[in-house]
Amino acid sequence: MVGKASLSCILAAVLLVSPALSSNVKGVAPEKQALYQVSGKTWTCLDKSKTIPASAINDDYCDCPDGSDEPGTSACPNSVFYCENKGHIPSYIKSYRVNDGVCDPECCDGSDESSGLIKCDNICKEVGIQYRKHKAEMDAILTSGVSTKREWIEYGKSKMAELQIEKAKLEEQIAIMRTELGALEKIEEVAREREQAARDSAAPVNVVIKTDSKCPPCKISSDSAAFKISSLRNHMKNLQDEVDELLTILHDMKRDHNQNYHDMAVKTAISGYDEFLVDYDVIKSERQEDADEEDNIEQADDVQDEEQDFTNEVVEEDTDPVVKEAAQGNVVSRITSAFVTKLEKLLPAKFKEALPSSLLNVDEAERLQQATTKASDAVREKRNEIGTKENDLNGVNAKLNKDYGRDLEWMKLENECFEKDEGEYVYSICIFGGAHQKSNRDGANTNLGTFDSYTGSADSSSPEYHNKQLYNRGTKCWNGPERSVKAVFECGAKTEILEVTEPEKCEYQFKMRSPAVCQLVATKGEDEAEARVIHEEL
Ligand code: MAN
Image (tube, rainbow, N blue to C red):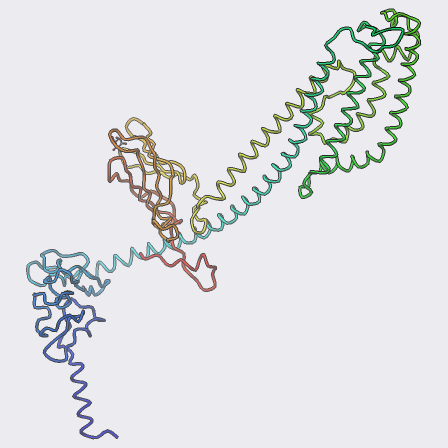
């Protein structure tokens, strides 16, 4: 139970702490009016630096260092004046604009001019109606811009995923091609060596084929059967080398190929090679029989050699059909052709292209030269193919590493162009491309610069960072800098240039709109990228 004495104490205390002023303090917002309640005859500046008579508030004399004692006059330069603007939106203006004889648009209620210097009508009702209409339009733009931006973000994500797949595919293709190039280079190297060896050995017209006691180093004509057999033997050896080389290529391919890359041509070649190895012994023994047959031919020739001179008559008078056939190259061809052809078949088509179309029955030197040319062509072609693929890969990597905005929203606009006719000139800009100024008078098109960077903030992680773009290194201005463009974007339902100005000579400013810079609405449960953006203030 509260006693009489204590009740009067409480009432006295209430009166002491809240002796509300008879009217609102001018220039003070309703929520701050309490700060100007006085408990007695004095009042303390809001920064607590000074206590002054309560009557000094708004007496047009600045007492407080923070200017808080003059919210309704222009006496303190560091103070602000609150306009209620009933019917519209309240606002603050700087104190020096109070009673300065100008109706400030920010104070549509005219409360800033109460000295009688000028009469300002309260136009807040009309201003409020217009403002709300404009805001509704802007809200519609924002809603549309936000929804377009969401689509662009999805586009960016799927495009990036496609690029990742393309990158992996190109890298795999390049790796396969490099393996192929290695094999082709090997074929080319061997072809060159063989061509050189053939050239070296083909030089003399008369060659020594053997020595014995009866015939000390005998020379024979290149037309003789013995010579032909000797060259065919060389040919045979070359073909054997070729077989060995094909086997080495297939062996290396089997050993070095990347098992992760499923190149069917290589896989087929490897399994064919494995099968071939099983048959290889059989082929070798066939080859041995053929070699024995050749030895018999040679022995028969030796006997004839002892009985006859090594003259051109040998070929003409020789009645042995095997020798004749050998001299024409057919026996050796038959012996080796099946063997080489079998092996050659194992090589994937792309390697075979590097080999001569026919290993046999052509002039040896010509054949070897053709082989080298063909191998070199194949190597060059493969290098070109790799170069093209590498260019493609560089392009893909450049896109993957490019800054398309925090949520990839700018990707959709890449190389999209926009223009604005400003009377004297038509200005254009292609996003991430170039900006131009085309004269409406003579059609001259001036380069204003190419995309350089985002400049919305020095901090690339700031939400404003992607709101401005710099296009620079345009055509040099006479007696001035290279032309450049600052493109400043605000949220819009579509991408467009609103206005172009030239604040400094040859430095242009494109005021633009685009959904790309609309701030997304954070809704519960959305992912991190979307949750960090908020409604744009209009
Ligand atoms: C042209 C235009 C102008 C620019 C002058 C500078 O007339 O590119 O925008 O100011 O050159 O000489």
